[in-house]
Length: 636
Image (cartoon, rainbow, N blue to C red; front, side, top):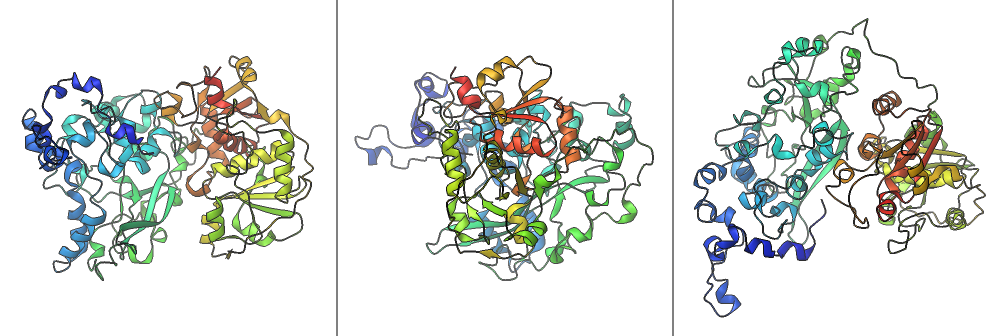
């Protein structure tokens, strides 16, 4: 989440002065001396964060009952976290472990002010609405400003297609997580799921066992709802903490992997046998900088833990066929999924072969036609390792120059499409649209690329690689490929990275521009009601709904008639791809099928270019990128 603009952080609006809270004198909440004649005197004993340091005075004067429990709520104390850590350490090391935790892991907590008037410290602070106090939190600037990596990215479509509650029902966070839950005391809890006030699916979806869905009758009280109704989610590995040369605290995660695993429930309060589990980043050396052998009792608590992803859909790939789950060993947590030091801790969660539901011989699932998938448009690290350096193979690293310099695939050139001036500047009359055809051909030729080369593109994010591949195909490249898993896969396979930069020799690219791969706004407008065409908006849900707006756009919203399929549906974390069958199934549920003309659109064309590549790979025949996208459309 981007920081608030500096002026917005401190602005006190005129509306606040006329509000109920604005009628209360400043010192009533913040202390200080309004009678003082200088700044120093006025700010004597001033408290900038009163709801944290003096909640009874600042908030409890009017909201006594709420403050009484909210000051010990999970949001305020993170009380379950130290309880879990304590199970892994020993009495003689607990003080050092807890001190380390407080220095690195306690910054996420918040108080009344962080939910009702400003961003919490973790989200870089600042008023979200000119010091106005709002009864419900802002889901973008407050809730997901903190809960972004998992909740926000899942809910709004940075990972997966987003959540049906956001997309179809326009529900914000408090729709499920109401005040009773947020203000409830967390004292004595060992898990946030044990909070009595926590929301449950059945609070809204009642009497499922009596409904028309046969699967509910079969699976209810046996399988967590999210097992069938969630999408893939991120798993974090090996958080390490420490201090840099200046004494500033930091933490790093070894890696993030997007996936999905079903584990066995070991929590009697959960009420079902199978649940989704997520790897948390704890490891044996998490606090090694501060205390040696911090976790002598590491095996006491699992690190594959119950999870409830915020990416619910009524229809999901794993629920599209019984055998996407039944008989699918890969979907269930196995001992082979565990690192050596994790095996003891996760014994209760691992699903043995005897507990894997048996494959069902006869199902109603309809097969997905993958005969037109252009398989050569995706290569893996093993293929590239065997072929890199061969004549006619050109490898392009699309990361920023600094990342390339730290280590890249030997022989790869560095060509970051966001820095290579393929697009017009942001202050142009047509901002970020493609530059002239000749300029594009010159940039590619200067990079040493030829249209006749087999050009393999890699990076780390997926979307930037896809954008580069669209530009290459538009310029007339005839054989392009995407390196699945990118630098993560290359590193994971143990292959060598070079720090020697490749200085390309300029050549003539020689490509023939493919105008059919670009659409302007006039074309989009003419095809809004065309049954044989689909305008696919790949922005995040909150952008497509106009809740947030790109900085260059004249207004928020979406192109009438467009279908929102967020970019997270096309690319997984770190450049991984879902199987073609799953991608084609998903697109079909949105009415997007290979025989139709598909125009991809976003804010500026960048993400639309990424989606273009995926559709081409899946065998779609007529795909175009809306070059000006929403920024251009909103200005007309």
